[in-house]
Image (cartoon, rainbow over all chains, first blue to last red; front, side, top):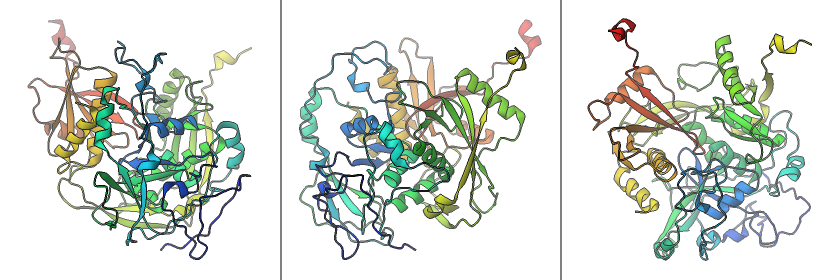
Length: 412
Length: 129
């Protein structure tokens, strides 16, 4: 049951908001163009980014926006690079295939009409049953115990300031220009292949805590789309995902999303940059400054405490609890060879947490990329425990740092 | 063929039978192998359940191929499921004993791990003869 949340605007000393009209009657606002969203006014220096939901990550649609988003806090990763999307700056004739060298000569491209603001048309759709929510993004305050205020951290590292409050009454449909003729003209210059991709936790952090991202998805059959703007037939219609929708969707596709998000949010709020730890055998690795400057200092391993094993719920939670010395020893060995400290991050669920058990019916024919799931062309019903977003602030965390102590080396 | 066109082709070809996530994962591996690592020949294949790739690094050495199966980093594995999956692959060369997993994280970091059924360990006494 969705309740309407009140507007909570906290200004950071910049009170001018022309172009943002707030309708005081029903606690919502009407935006007929992208420029009227709170974060895209010309006077504000902050941008609003747009991403497409891929099913397992979020892709930033516009290349320039991706670069900008990366520069303001190292969010995401270029798909062809290790961190910053620099693949397109490399001469095509380079013999080495890696994306690490930045050559001085850049391909000159004329990207005159690819300004995404011109191409997007925010149209209002009739409210559907599934998405009739009024959502607010508020600045996270004490969302997790022991977080410092976000303001302190952002002044040091990022120029992007967080904005709150996007009030939406219904799903807004955004049309994206897929103008093919434009692209053919530019095919003589090198086509930009790379884009920035965000993980689910990063994307959710941007929409929930910072409010500067809008995630779009392809329309499903259950969405009602107004056919009012049918003039541009080469524009593709995409549906905007609300925060609640994102929260539910991400939990259903990834078992351990809540724990991963808690860890991500916690470290981001402290000023660390958590990135994927897939190559280091841990859940995240923490960078103090941007990844290009120094190597990561810590690897994080997330443990869920108080996790009940209930046979009715999903069988595998992806939760790792270190239960023996050899596991710890293995982790320690890897971390030594990659020169990172290990932090074990324990998450404790609140006792009175509210969760709804939803039946997720997989409509797709195949297994969504999950190799173990071979149910093909069947409507499969799985029960998943879906936690409420509001309970996020009740989780408790603590951390241990792991270091190997070698007696020989500590003798005087 | 540009990569955008390739993606559209893939979508059109596999939209009915496979999910969009699998198409994305397979596409990401293709792009990684072809544009970044400059492998010579990478083809898409599929069976009922998944899309996978047959990749040859160097055309001078076509027998040195890899069957790459894209998967998410959050997949949970069992030995049985791996065996089952291996049996279900189509169009494999006869002497194929190994496949490579292209494990992708949500932000598109890829790690490749090769799994083979022939461990190469032979009985020590036999190897001396």
